Image 1 (cartoon, rainbow, N blue to C red):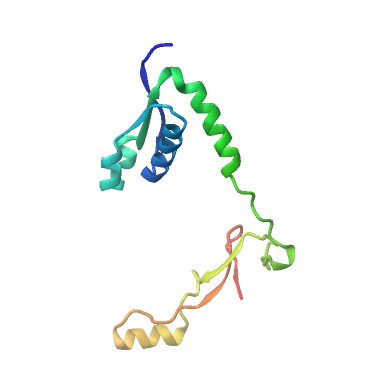
Image 2: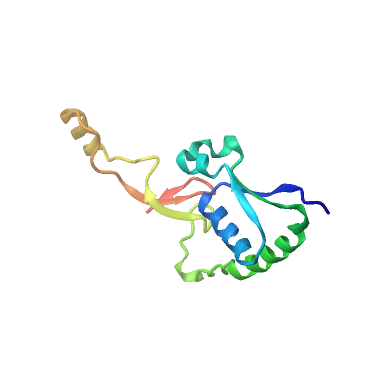
Length: 140
């Protein structure tokens, strides 16, 4: 192995890149970040520049992979399984991929539409309902 510097990983979140950099520094592995300032100042350029790049020596890649693999195993939280009784199911297809929010089809009632046209204002009240993301059905 040589002392060649390579890009080990690219991050679209500068904070995440700095956390990984700090872990490597604590383990005594030399590393540095590039394009961090551009990504921090204007996050819209992040994809164009390829994110914040973590640069390391090629000889340290195996040690870094082992260190970060151990950390990933510890940091990944287990998903809480929702109780079946708390889930709302779609009346149309029976799917549980349902959420409560603003209606998309009948967003405003007729009296709100008439009143907003007469007063030349944006409708001030919107209907809420459950929306199924599988079939698109809306219900209360």
